[in-house]
Length: 72
Image (cartoon, rainbow, N blue to C red; front, side, top):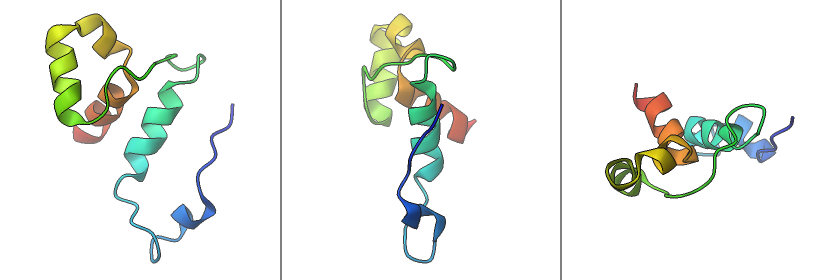
């Protein structure tokens, strides 16, 4: 299992890394060995709407896990 991110992300002096945790969690949940998530919605407001309208898809939505992880 491998995830590739641009080498520059390690150099926070040159790159805004504020969204790096979100990205790593989001992409990591796509691995079938982790959760096997899909992309049903992107962005916080779309994820909130998805959670209300289709909770099952929200459970398997990568961004929902990323937002929960960084905001919990």
